[in-house]
Image 1 (cartoon, rainbow, N blue to C red):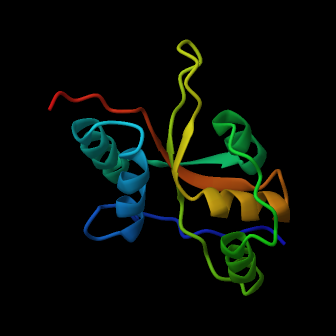
Image 2 (image 1 turned 45 degrees about the vertical axis):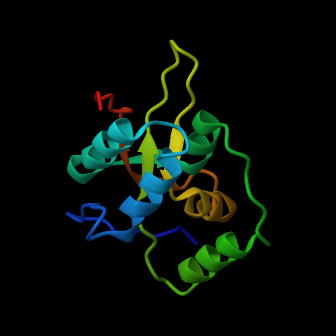
Amino acid sequence: MTPHYETGNRTCTCSGWPRGTSAAAYLSLLAGEATVTATVEAFENAESAHFKAKDILGASRFALLPTDNPHVTSDLKQLADGRALSPVLLVRGDAASGRDAIIADGYHRVCASYHTDENTDVPVRIVDLAHRSA
């Protein structure tokens, strides 16, 4: 079964899309408030793209979670029921500086997609880490 995602013109905003708040919470562990705010704002305007589940995990160096992880299990059930998963929010890595890609939101969805088929095209919104002075 191929994972299926919500796509189209859906945008992510902190107030209108709960995933924006999840991304902001995670990114706030890695960067200051001004950078987090600017990066989350960039997600709002980002176009959708698609990357293979195996490539997202590789570029982020996040470990593959097992299928018995409760969140992965939930996403796998959602896929089995034919329900869409939300797009993944990615911050592009920087090979020159050695910074890995960051899965700002959707780590469990990427893992569920990988377990379904590592070559699954996963819809994402990808942005560069925005730098803004406070």
